[in-house]
Amino acid sequence: MISITIPTFNNVKYLKLCINSLEKNSHFKNEILLHINDGSDGTLEFAKQKKLKFTQSSTNEGLCVGMNKASRLSSFNYILYA
Image (cartoon, rainbow, N blue to C red; front, side, top):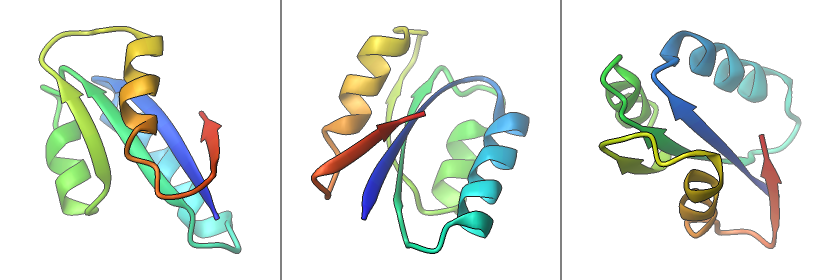
């Protein structure tokens, strides 16, 4: 199993496409981890609805900080940065 970490900054439309594609095309039950920068576009609500693990910041902390925070939630030894 792999933990897939995805940083996001107010792009829920593309996040939904990405997650739906991962769920549809994977043969394994991979773990999806998000870092939500801001999230005022509905991203937070989407993550809660999908019951995804996530970290959050009220401002855009940037790619590296977001990936590091999300990766700490990983349950597996392998992490894919998306």
